[in-house]
Image 1 (cartoon, one colour):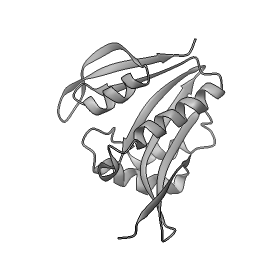
Image 2 (tube, one colour):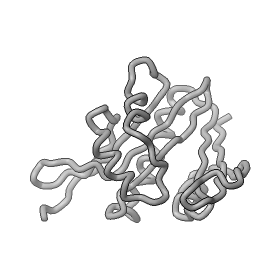
Image 3 (cartoon, rainbow, N blue to C red):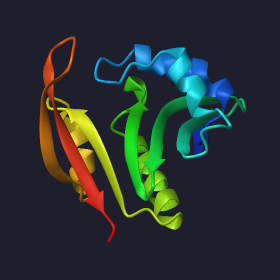
Image 4 (cartoon, rainbow, N blue to C red):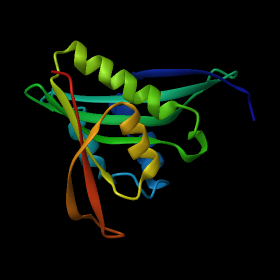
Length: 159
């Protein structure tokens, strides 16, 4: 196996959909989307969407998608719809880097706040959001299925 080198965050493109779906299939806590839902993210008719991928490049020059983030804007508020890091790449700060890049980009566009929902049992994700000063803003009983679980809503305000 080649030695891993640099990490790079870039805007995702439609050609990344298969890699995003593959990562999602291996994560029980991820939001599982249909391919058509990802197609809509990259539609030119939907300019208020943002998708990022984090890649790790090997010495062989090949880059592997290790995580991704998808968000949408409504006015000056952004919803973080999905963020995922590959199981083999967790605990290395990739989620922190993705979230930081997202926050930097939307703040530069004049965002006033961000919001998201996360499974109550997803302690690593909740700890990540709390480190970034997201505040718990509510709960949705039985929001998730397989297994049924509450969603915890978080908000981060910039104003």
